[in-house]
Length: 79
Picture (tube, rainbow, N blue to C red):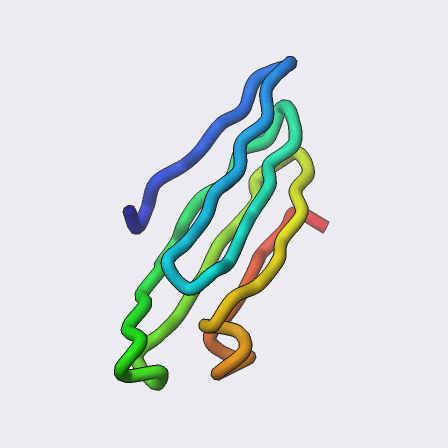
């Protein structure tokens, strides 16, 4: 959901799997926001994935959005 923020606690982890195959693993004490996610397999020009990590740590394996259009994938971090 666009605009959704996912928070993990002190002893928790989360794994987010998106329709295009992108996988995002959130470490403990992480705040992560889905700014915009649009996936349309038939129209790659309409696809985009914009995320931001407010705090914490994560690992990302990108999927079809970034493979078809690198400019359509963006991850903002505090540093």
